Image (tube, rainbow, N blue to C red; front, side, top):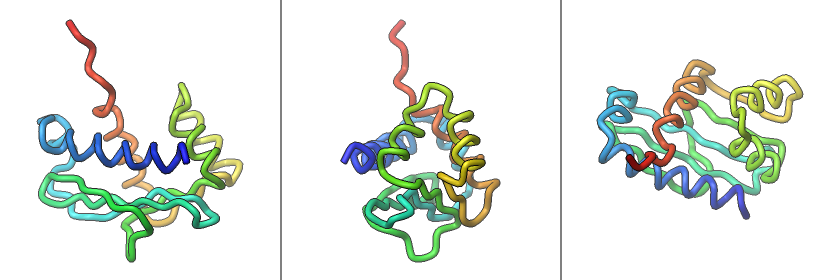
Length: 124
């Protein structure tokens, strides 16, 4: 349940950033693709559509994603995506085969770069 909520929130944050954050919009560039995050058992899946510098998300798997990140289960996905050192957690998960990447690995790196724009802004 936490992982499902996390993916939903990720979609909301990316949709808002795609409307209001010029740096985030610049990272989206002229990309036109769909990607998904899911559990390997197929119980949880959410896909994200990037088009015209906007991001939308829907529950369920995508028909033909440019890339997909599969986590061994929802608890592992939640732990990885909320880890202090996400880079290390992802690399460890990929090495241990707890995370599977399908599609273009360069786009996975692009997605991980996007997430830095989703942190809450510190008040001055």
